[in-house]
Amino acid sequence: MKKLTIAALAGAMALVGAGAATAQDSVVLQLKWVTQGQFAGYYVAQAQGFYEEEGLTVEIKPGGPDIAPEQVIAGGGADVITTWMAAGLAARERGVPLVNIAQPFKNSGLLLTCRKDMGVETTEDFPGKTLGVWFFGNEYPFYAWMAKLGLGTEGGAEGVEVLKQAFNVDPLIQGQAACISTMTYNEYGQVLRAGLAEEDLTVFNYRDEGVGMLEDGLYVLEENLEDPAFVDKMTRFVRASMKGWAYAAENPQEAAQIVLDNDMTGAMMLEDQVYQVNEINKLVAGSTGVLDEADYRQTVDTLLSAVSPENPAITREPEGAFSTVVTDGL
Image 1 (tube, rainbow, N blue to C red):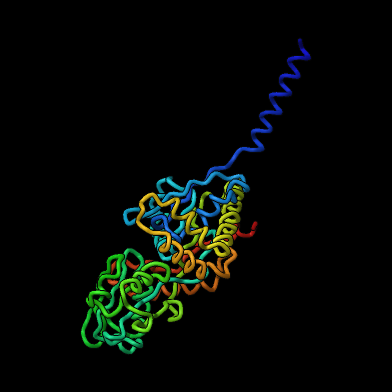
Image 2: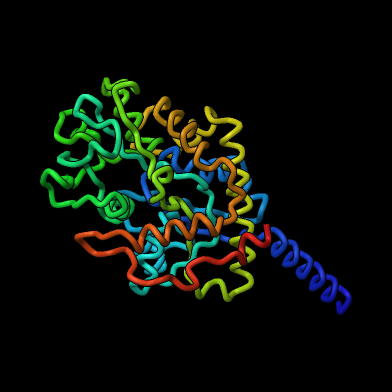
């Protein structure tokens, strides 16, 4: 009887050990925006089993106009978020201790798209024009650029008139603004589909103008990086995510279909998602997930030089805003 009990105990321990070996660590990822090709790498990593291979179960939560990822993670609703560095640094200065742990987006997709028939072909044509600008944290590179050009933003012949632009292209199509904010992978395509040809447009990329900012990066709460188990989990998450981005680059049509399959809104067609994935792949190209400190420096300098009429993004040099502890393990 004693032998049977010992055998049973040994068997039970073996089962527990097997269960521990196959247990999946959970990760909740909050996206910056709605389900679209902008986030293809994460959906692909999930669909292709890359997260599972790393021992992870990942929940991907879509964002939207009424969802601030910084608030979600501060409230305990996510382990990691995607957001632009401007928003991440602003949140950190205001008391949410966000830290950039990886930077999948190497390049910037933010553009100022202008109509030539409204008199804009170079920056010298800006004075006296109405320019559409996104706010909610997207305005900082614009104000840094205007300050660099020595242009006021209150209108008049020597400055520019700022139009607070909704997240659409109507002001450009309807002639309400000579230029509007667009993203390479989204609104710029909408402008073309609305009937304006590339030769009708003058396009400025903020990075080319020296006032670019890092866009979609991965951020966590600083205190969690003190936990080695959390760091290990995030290392596996980033590694699988970058594998997803690499797969999306090689298989854009399949990646777009995966994104479409996860979009419960039905707001976009497959051709829209394919366009986005192809454009997003250009922004991820060259990235290993490791933050380039020179790109970080340009972002900080841009934010510090932005004279915004509303709340500034940051008012002082950030400290501890990024960490390589996760990507060091890739």
